[in-house]
Length: 81
Image 1 (cartoon, helix red, strand yellow):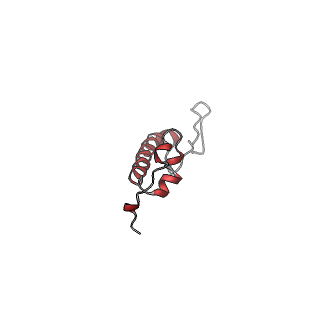
Image 2 (cartoon, helix red, strand yellow):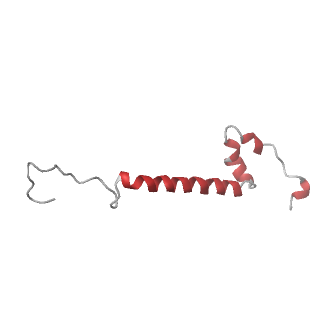
Image 3 (cartoon, rainbow, N blue to C red):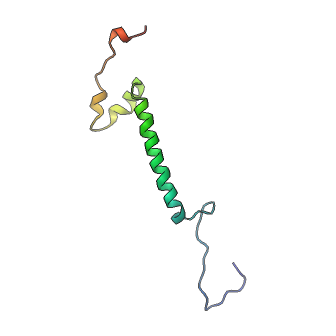
């Protein structure tokens, strides 16, 4: 800010920022990164669907479709031990 400011000029204030990005400038990036994060999370859950720990801890706790993953037992012929 300059040392002298005219009383007839505009009243300028520095905008709050983080690493040079204001909230208005960062909003599109945040929206895009949020979308990519949601798709990456859904993809990870989709690929890890067959893991029993993921089924019990995450998928069975989904309110409407969680019953799909309950009660499915592995047949004895598929048990490697």
